[in-house]
Amino acid sequence: MSSHPSVAEQSASVAPARPLERVRAGLVGSGFMAKTHSLAYSVARMLYAEELPALERVRVADVVPELAHDAAARYGWGEATTDWREITQADDVDLVDVVTPNFAHAEIAIDAARNGKHVLCEKPLATSLEDARAMYRAVRDAGVRTQVGFVFRTWPATALAKRLIEQGRIGAIQGFRAHYFHDYALDPAFQVSWRLRHETSGGGSIADIGSHVFDVARYLVGEVDEVLANCRTVVPERPDASGALVAVDVDDVADALLRFENGAAGVVQTSWLAGGYKTDLAFEVHGETGSLKFSWQRNGELELYDATDPEDAQGFRRIIVGPQHPHADGFWPVAGQGLGYGDAFTILVRDLLGSLRRGGAPAPDFLDGMRAAEIVAAAQASSREGRWTAVERIAPDA
Image 1: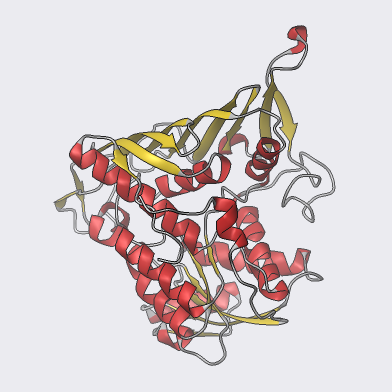
Image 2: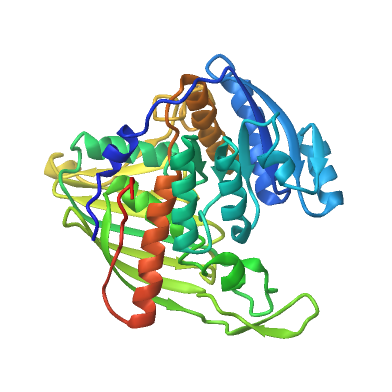
């Protein structure tokens, strides 16, 4: 395994960028995530105008003209195009936002970096570890700023968990447990889409929703050294748009054991067949003197157990997310008034735009995206070979 810096050292090693007082953005893709990102730009500018650069939404691209024009009209982009190169190579664009299906991420992001654009890209970074590494190297060599849509690590409750860990509130970490469960594909008649084809997605639940969990694991606990995984295709055939049954070549369900660099152990489960779970990323972190617990289904809460409490008062306590917690300032003045999925992207975009104005480094970035891809690749290899598999982390300057 290559030598490598810690997560903190990776962030600290990023050189300052030229501050921008105005950011001209282009969006590639017009689907569900285009709506989410567009909303985030609007809300971030509304809530944090004094700390962010001026923002111009220049154009949006989609290969289907009607979709591109509809997205421009609905989401407030200046014009529409069917050629994403009119964004990545345009003189009037500073930031390229990539919200296409996974298979298109690498080509678009690399071209944007080579043309000096900062890049925001949805997760997972790419359909292969090779492409993820190529994307990281392209943006590193170009000296541009990047961000990946790992919104669960920047969520206030997760960021609070990180702060409590760093403060030593639960002691040295011994264990990590997490899952990301959906049930949208529980019905065998669920139609095949690009997510259910390895060529276009890069993997099933372990790659798609699992990349989120692995990023949270790294953020809270540290680097993962080894993985033992079992990835399973439970529904082997599904109908395509014509109704014909086609083979599914990605996992529906995955279970993984993790060995962290610091000696902690972990368990991660992913599934889009988990009946009753509509969207739930949940984690527990167990330390020598306490534990932390979170579930997206109660995303305004973080639970803390402190073993140093008096014996007759021990147990998990609920901490209600409010403006005193990381990234939650600027929304509502009173704890418990609630944040949601769209707000997660507002938090992400606030950090990206603020960093571009300050000349700093947003997070999570393409290095984090590559690190998650390295864990996914190890998990997929482990499942194929039936053994513990090392996570091959390349050095950031390799």
